[in-house]
Amino acid sequence: MKNRYSIYKNLYGASACLLTACMVLTACDKEKEFTPAMSEAKLINSITFDVSATLPLAIGMDSTIVYSVEAPDDLEDRTIVWKSTDESIARVSQDGTITGVAEGTAVISATPPIGFGATASVKVEIVPEIIKATSLTLTNPREGEVIYETDKIQFEAQVLPADHTYSYLTWKSSDENIATVSSQGLVNCLKAGEVTISALTHDHSGVYGSYVLKVVEYIPVEHVAIEPYTDMICVSMGDIALDVTYTPADATLGSVDWVSSDENVATVDLGIVTPKGFGTTVITATCRATGETASTTISVESGWWIWDTRNEFGEWTVQGQATNGPKIERKDGKLVVTLGSGSKRRADLRLPVNDKNPLYLDIATYPVFAMRCDIPKGGANTLDAVALSGVNIGGPKCNDGITLADGTRLIYYDIAALNKYDLGVIGFKTFQIKVADIPEANVTSDTYNVYWVRTFKSVAEMENFAEAEVAAGK
Image 1: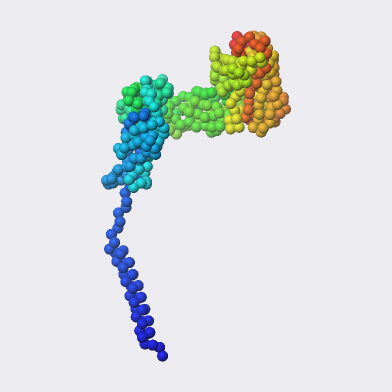
Image 2: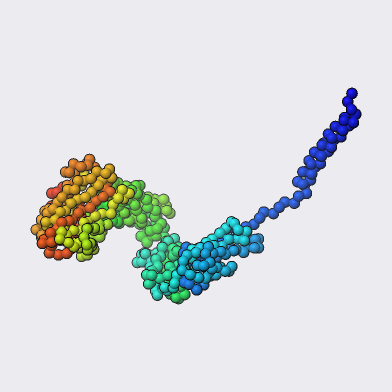
């Protein structure tokens, strides 16, 4: 027979557990019912410094950072805490005033007192002295053009002397109803009228610059027509202005959107086409107001290159091996190259190409690479080129070339005839003409002239072109 005391004891324990569980459940329900809702913490959203990315400051000089705090309207405590990464270089007080202590660099930062969340910082460079501005000139890159409502113009500022300390400027508009200006000098034209755009230096020099801008009423283009462009286009000869008719004639050009179907061939802006590569692209203009369109096809001749005074000989430069190195300048419509010193004179011509920015030649259509020059005879003129595939052109030479009636010479290379590459478009990561080993006895001047560098379809075409130039006195 079971002990009655044990039965009662077990029943009492079970009752106690049940009572406890009920109390816990009741307590949980009561907590939901009576615990007040906690308010959502409000924090500073952002801190912004009105200062350049790097702030120059002289030793012993103070500068107070202008800043703004963005936070919920009902946030009362907008305090921020200022810190310096190196107080031996620059100190900062809790009102944002920075003091230069010693030469070097420190980072000044501001955060909320809580220690996290929004933050802002500026690199401070402490220098021995501040070189103040003596002049500030503002330039409108569209000087001479009509400026319309809705136009945007990136103004440029030139501060002198060139080694001035502070480049940061404060830009202002005399009438923001007519035009506004950003902290970087971008002017947004809003309404017809006259407005003064100004910029002020921050070095306490008192130097400022200003520009009076006239904004004309915006008149949308309703109809646009483009004359077909049928001339051959050379990739290296720069911009081409299309013959465009706008209706009405005094309409705002910016009210037409321009697009190129292949920007690897050419880009377009306001009817100005810039060749970029070989091929064909369709240029289309669309009137924003009416949706009317017009288009023309542009073809950039594959393999045709010209470098001369019209494009300032592009990126051609010079290099060589001599105690006193060679030099190059663009002068009087020619490329004037100064030979390096030594018993064998040298001054190589090269294009700064590489595997990411190659020179593309179409040796099927324009296989002849040539230049007209007056390089002294007796040296070695070697074409040094390496294709993207790694195949070297083999160093073909054209030491004396063809002498023209005026004494100038044609140095040329028929690349297709070398049988080094498949016919077609070839990319080159190295391309230069080594002008070397010129005997000192043959040098009558320390310089030689290059009249042009071009590609041709044949040697005969090259000769005919050059002889016609000489006959015309060019």
